[in-house]
Every structure is written in C-alpha cells, then in structure tokens.
Amino acid sequence: MKRKIYKLIFFRLMGWKITGSMDASIKKSVMIVVPHTSWNDFFTGLFARGIIGLEMHWVGKKELFKFPFSGYFRWMGGEPLDRSGGRNNVDAIVDIFKKRGVFRMAIAPEGTRKKVTEWKTGFYYIALKADVPIIPIAFDYGSKEVNVAPAFYPTGDIEDDFRKLESHFIGVKGKFPEKSNL
Image (cartoon, rainbow, N blue to C red; front, side, top):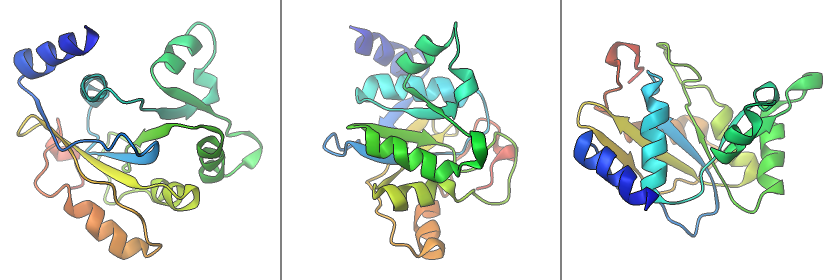
C-alpha cells in the first residue's frame, strides 16, 4: 500500500520517473547520488527508495543517533559512524559493510550541497576496500528523472574509473544547476 502511495505522489503528482533498475541480488553496494545541490534530494531519494522497494542505507555521525531521533534515523536506513579517536572514516564504513548482510549505502560524492570542482574520493575507496560495486544514480531535475545505472566494479585505476562513473551524469541537472560540478 505504501508503495502505491509513493508511486501516486512521485509519478503522478510530482511528474517524476525512474529509469534503470537495481539488481536485487546485489546486497552490498555504494550508491553514488549525483548531483547533490538541494535538501530536496533527500525526499527525491526517499520516494525512489520506496518505489524501488529495496533496503537502502546512509551513514551519519553517531551524534545524530541520540534520543529522540535515533529510532527514526535507523528506521530511515541510517547507520551511525563513530568518528572519534582519529579513526579513518573509510575503514570505519568498511567495517559496517563487513558486519551487515545487506548494506546498500547512498552517498553524495560531492560531499556537500555547495558547488565543488571535483568529487571526494572516499566513496571510491570504501567500495574498493569493501569489495562492493558502485551504483551511479542520477537525480535529474531537468527531466524529472531518477536514473539508476548498472553496477560498476572499481578496478583500482581511480582516474579511469572516475571518468567512466562521471560519464553517467553528463547533461544531468541538479535542483540548483549553478551548484553542480557537472
């Protein structure tokens, strides 16, 4: 029933569409969502996740996961990240992948909603160290389309792999295109 409501709102009322699909047999992945220019991206992602119907996650600093929000954030797919003691974030997230049977982590490679000139590399090294694929997902406000690309397996050649990953986002417009690095 909830899925039908999501579809009604997202497809009919908001006029969006979803192209491509998630391979349900891939239980662990790093989903890069580009471009990230607005808080609206969070809600676009919630609708897409509800329609796609697969368990999806995100990581946030552990301080977010305190009462009264901890239960809600976990229900929304959140996983707390302990960044204390100078611990490497990439390794801490790789540990989460090792502990979980299903962990499809959404992340914005820009690292912010502000304009940046290049992506951060953490998502790439997380996928490489956790031995999981990267799934490019475009939020194109120009065409009102969420486009899910096939899984991409990083090779360790970051420059070539970034060129291939970035090619999925050519022509994609964020909610605020002036903040996009595309």
